[in-house]
Image 1 (cartoon, rainbow, N blue to C red):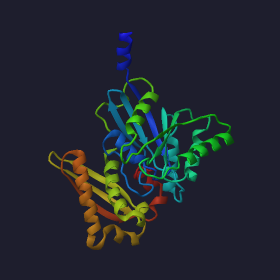
Image 2: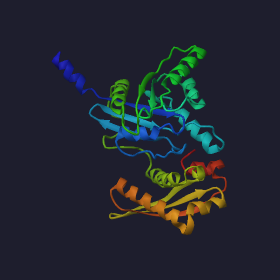
Image 3: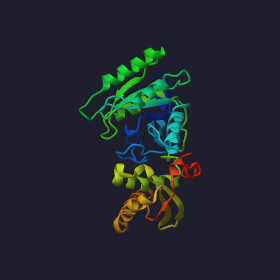
Image 4: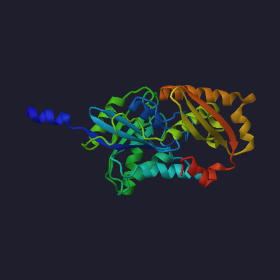
Length: 309
């Protein structure tokens, strides 16, 4: 009996967790809390995450690979439609789907859409419904549970999620959620090297950090018209030199991104340099240009270049 207990303790679990939900529900904040470091950019503006980012948590229990997906939203342009397709496709072929719901506000159309999708016959992953923002007094948990039951009745489905509450911002419930995820992914060896935090390409990560600085400062004024592409990374022993371009889709937006006398560009550059230097452990010198690429959000080749297609 004692030998059996020792063997069970040595068994590790590893699996893929798709973190899905409506835009701005707190997916990136939660994932950063789960892995203990910043992997996905965060802001109060919807559609901040544009790519699928894999964040990896490795510990004695095994390994959890989180797929941080763009928030599903009502798309107007090619970029938005591609982000929605990317998010929906990520929920397929994983071990667990973590459906994040904003407990502080009533259900939205996008929440119902995810529930309907997760009840499809081809969706066989275990579902955990996390009521996020549990640190906020407002509580719409009953409305979400009622919505799930209503959709299940309509579709004739007996599928039930595992309901949990937590807060990615404060860390409330994160330990309990982590334990539950390890219990739900299969036993097996790690999927990635133990020291890997993410497999997200470095150029895309750097571009996201720069874009986050603009999104945070401009908020609703311009963020969805901005894209960043890192052209070159020169990795010297004492310092990295990075060159990139900030794209906007109208000439009238270029002045906003530059700021008065170029101050906003300088500020965003300095903030990104500081964060990248801390992230990579040596000084990073960043040189940015601002260019107009008319209607880039509708241009397939631009979207492909930027990693969105």
